[in-house]
Length: 472
Image (cartoon, rainbow, N blue to C red):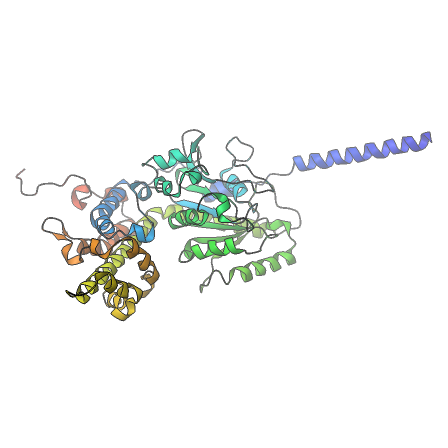
C-alpha cells in the first residue's frame, strides 16, 4: 500500500511538472519579428513630411466658393446625409475595420501599432469585447477622449456624428497615441457584427453610423475568421452599404495558421462562395490570407506565404497613405459631380412643374403626378442629354419622393436665377471646378511638382481678395 501511495505521488508530481512546463511554453510563446512592418511602412525613416498646406488651402477655397453655395441652395445634404466640413477636408486617411465579432480586428490593430503588453493596447478576447466605435489618432501622449467631446470639437472631422444621438456618442471613444504611423493615418475599430442581435438593441442606428464611416474611409478592412464564415442579415446589410466602394474594400481571412493547407483552401473557396452574391462586381476585392497577431506562426504552416500576404497588405496601406492628397481631391470632385447632378434634377423638376401649371391647376396634384412618374415627363432622360453626366451617377428616383416630401418645390429657384453680377452663376462655378480647377490641382501633385509651391497670390487661395484696380 505504501508503494502504491508513493507511485501515485510520483505520477502526480510528474503531471504537475508537465502542466507547469506546458504553461511555461504558452507564456513564453515565440514573438514574431516586426521588422517588416517598420520597413514597409517606413516608420524609422526621419524624412520630412510633405507640405500640402498650399494644396489644402486651395482645395478648401474651391469647395467653399464653387461647390458649397450650390450644395446649400438645393439642400443636397438632406438627400445624401453627407455634409463635408473643413475638418473632413484636412483630415488624415481613415482605415476602417469591419467584420463579425471576435475575428481579430482589435488584435490586428494592436499588432500593426505594436501596442501589445502596453497600456495603449485595445482590449481583446474570445467573447465580443468591442462595444464602442474606437478611433485611434495621433497625440503627444496617451489620452482618452469621450465621444461627446469629439462631436463638440468643430476642428475635428467627427462633429457630424452628433446627429446620431447621445446614445451613440456614449458608444464613441477616441484614443490619442504617440505612434509614428498615426501621424499619417487614423484607425477606426468597430463593434463586431452579432447576427442574433437586432439593431434596436444597440440603442442607436448602427447601420447609419457604419455608413457614415464607410463614406469617409480611404481603406476598409473586412475581417473574417476561418471558423465563422456564416453570412447573416446584418452582414448582408453591411455589404449592401459597401456598394460602390469596392475599390476601397480588402477582405482579410485572419487566423489562417489555425488550419491545415487542405482545409484552408476549402475555407478560402467557401468565403468567395458566401460573398459572391454580396459583391457583384467583375473584379472582386483583394483577399489577404494570414494571421495578424504578434505570436509566431504555428508550426507546419505556410509561413512564407503568410508573411508575403502580410507585406502586401502593408504595401496596400502605405499606398493609401502616400496618395492621401490625390484621394482627397478626387473625393471632393466626386462630391461636386453629385451636387451638380442633384441641382440639375431639382431644376428640371421645378421647370417641369412651372410648365405644367395653369391658372386653374392644383399645384400639389400637378407636382405629385411629376414626382410619382418622372419618366413620363423625361426628368432623368433630359439630364442625361447634358454633357458630363453618366447614367450610373444618377440618384435613385424613389429618393426624390422623400426629398420633395420634406422640401416643397416652391422653396427652390431655377438654376438660371442663381446668378449674380459679382459672384457669377452657381452652375458655371461648380462646372469650372469639376472640369478645370480640381483636375489642375490634382495634376500639380501628380506631375511631381512641389505641392507647397502653390502660391496663393497666383492661385487665389488666399481668404482676402486683392483690389486689382488700386495702384501699388
